[in-house]
Amino acid sequence: MNLSNMHRLTPLDTDQTLSLVSQSGQLKNIAIKLSELLEGALVYSQIVSVFTHYDLGTVTDVYQMLGGYVNKSYGVCTEKNGTKHWYFVRMYKSGITESEIQLEHSLIDFCIANGLDIAAGLIRTHNQKTYVKISEDNNGKAVDRFFAVYDFLPGEDKYTWDNPTLNDEEYVSMAEALATFHNAARNFDPQGRERVEPRIMELLPMLPVLFKEFAERKNESKFHLYYVKSLPEILETINRTRIPEEDLDKMPLNPIHSDFHPGNLKFKDNRVVGIFDFDWCKIDLRIFDVALAMVYACCSWLDESDGVLLLDKCRIFLESYQRTLSALNGLAPLNETEIHYLPTMIAAANMYLINWTVTAFYTGSDLNVYEYLAYLQHNVRVMKWIENHGDEILQVGKSLEY
Image 1 (cartoon, one colour):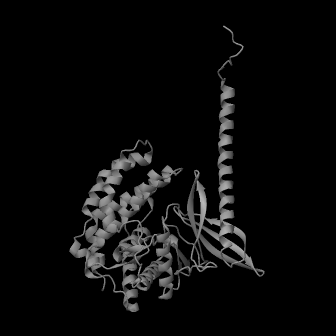
Image 2 (cartoon, rainbow, N blue to C red; image 1 turned 30 degrees about the vertical axis):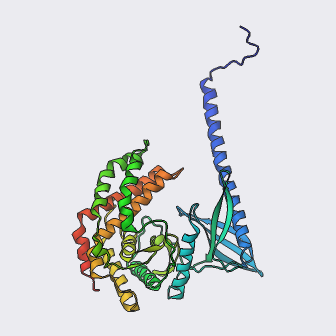
Image 3 (cartoon, rainbow, N blue to C red; image 1 turned 180 degrees about the horizontal axis):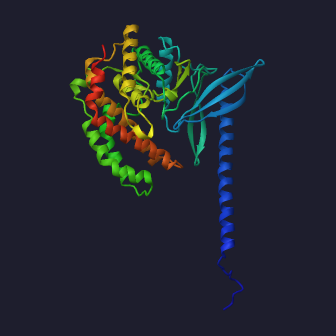
């Protein structure tokens, strides 16, 4: 056989194989680092471009704020006339509609004008718009990316959305902030704008089809195995989380924050001094926003009590919410029907977070399996606790004055 035009393939010995495995790992790390550097450089240039639409000076520093899962946030320092200024910049998620951003921004403006003095105000561009739209490439296709610039709020970023450990004064202040927001927003006219996401009691019946589709995917991760095991109970809970239409009609609709957790608040001296991240806002049941805030802030994350709803903290929160609205004398405090369905709405709010976790896991990429498994396990434990302690939750609600 003539071998002159052929290349001989040879096996590698153990030392050669180990060397190449080591080198491939180094190349992977280099690629990851290069990707991070390029992404950071791109965002920096985009933010510099965005600031050309404002009269805010020259960008000197950009810092990404850690902890966001959907939209990305940055602290941006500029210099104008020899003075440094700081601004909060939001880079919105890909796929958000312009109408959703307009809904959020018009609500923020309305609330600030009607008494919500702790919200981050929007900075206007040269042509008086509250956001900037730029085009970026996505696999050869031009897509819109939206940015908004806000006043930089004072106070401390003391907590994240998971495992917050507020003291009692902070629970009181957090509820006051939510009540003040709801009151300021009560007469807001969305002018036909809506979030793409349905209202909570419309969303829940849609989830079983989606959840079953996720369960059928081929996935051997620990997250998937736990999810499939938990799915029957999740579906049973969704089926039980119902409210008759005649009772829904007695529960006020109001602009809601829909992501009101301690990580979206600034604190100083045990007081909430800032509120931000309105990008999930929509018109929905007011009690849903209250329930969601309590699922975020009043559930234990400690190993021995993970998933327990801390009813003493719920009582502090609800009493403060009711007291604040009574004093403001605008939007009415929670009514008898809302109180009656408090356990149901807390279950709905917790299911909303389960939906966020599983949807993020199955539609995302490069996610930490164990991080999302911890989130899912926590909310499944919350789900089971609520199911077994509904009467106790209801008693907390019935003890309130309204």
